[in-house]
Amino acid sequence: MSVDRYTTLNLGPTHPATHGIFQNVLTLDGERIIDTEQTIGYIHRAFEKIAERRPFYQITTLTDRMNYCSSPINNIGWQMAVEKLLGVKTSKRVDYMRLILMELARITDHLICNSVIGVDSGALTGFVYVFQEREKVYEIYELLCGARLTTNIGRIGGFERDFSPEVIKKIYEFLDHLPKVLKQFEKLLLRNRIFMDRTINVGAISAERAMNYGFSGPNLRAAGVDYDVRVTCPYSSYDDFDFTIPIGSQGDTYDRFCVRQEEVWQSLKLIRNALDNLPEGKYFVDVPEFYLPPKEKVYDNMEALIWHFKIVMGEIGAPVGEIYHSVEAANGELGFYLVSDGGRTPYRLHFRRPCFIYYQALPEMIRGGVLSDAILTMSSMNVIAGELDG
Amino acid sequence: MDNDFITGKLKTRFIDDILLVDESSDMLTVVVPGKVIHEVIRFLKENESLGFTFLTTLCGIHYPDQELQLGVVYHLHCFSSNTHIRIKTFLPLENPLISTISDLFSAANWMERETYDFFGIIFEGHPNLKRILNVEYLDYFPMRKEYPLEDPTREDKDDSFFGR
Image (cartoon, rainbow over all chains, first blue to last red):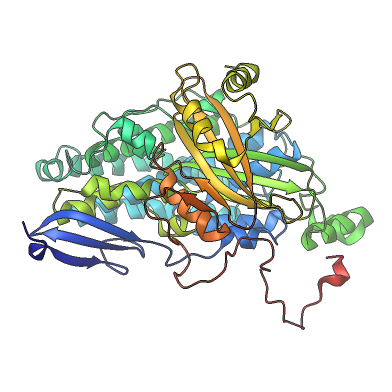
């Protein structure tokens, strides 16, 4: 077989089917993929370097821009990492509020990913249906923090404001309405012959290889490994709740789809449980060095004014220390390795970005398959360009 | 599996090469010399009673005031006992060579490329050690501390009022 019979095809950097900016230079034999070379870094913004000059609260806005499909998880994960360094323990109400927001974010992320798998296999309708629901979650974010996509939600120590009755009403409405849409969506795809033919045994990876590649989140669970940070290292009172971790067996596109779909149902259950049992109390804890005082007090109380100034200018040093904190983000284990030398900014901050780690397995997963399946495999891995490039 | 068990196991195998064992942070931290890093990681991964089969992160760090300025930090996770461990190693700024662990963990391939890209640490035996996030023609390693984040020639910003 001579090399001449292979075709080289540039998939990307900007290709409508890749949902983000990354390039794959494919070597094709007809329609079959022989090999691929990935190029990433098109939207690299040097967050780790920028973080070395920013006070801790300003880094929350950087985390927004990593996995922008579920920014509250990134925001809250970072705030919890700082709290771990400071040794702050949050109240149950803060924990439950965080849990509700993180699960809402997980739902939106999974809805986008799964509906995009549908789009890439030719079913645009489901996408439009679930996007309507995502909009409702964004309205909840908007009520809470004023932003929709890059939320910058919450503060170190809790939240900037409490859940208003309107927020609670909107969440309940969402919980009541989403199952109907989700059932329609599942009816459209889950046992659809065309969809199953397109996804079963496509882009499969074994549990062993997935572990070796550092997979985490739904992608690892679809391969059959029951690793979930929410269970192994519970944070934010996840251990108060009873929920199931769905796992797959083949590690293929269809399993990844099913795992995500079931996680949405589990998240709905978690949110309802947390909201029904939302403890009374304050929506923030007492960390005057990092949590802004109420604005009214700033005008007539000297200490409050001082704290306000010091926090906004980022003049307060964190304790010396080194921590690793991880949360179960929508697409895997999002970790923060934070080294502090006692200064006002981190000495070193490294983000464990789940899709940066698992995206490198793509060549192995699509080798030998056809081009159209590669597109599906890629979208089912939930690679978010912002997080990939960091 | 507690910290004493892990350090005991490591010490029986690498008695002369454990430079420091630190339990003050959130997980067991072991500092080893760069020359044994591959052996240590392989031991942690393949020893049946340890089983650190998941590479959580691998990243670089730069301490300009140390004799060995560049560091590589590995976080490993054992799923069966749910234990984390942090392995650190330090290298000189000139010729920072360390052996790759991408043969043990495929995940390390891009992590090492990223560390090379930002810190200039050279992973020997890596199958494809080239820049990954930065442009290929970049001639410095931007995460090293001597490269300021902001343009040092700027005169319109004065941070000295804030004690920086």
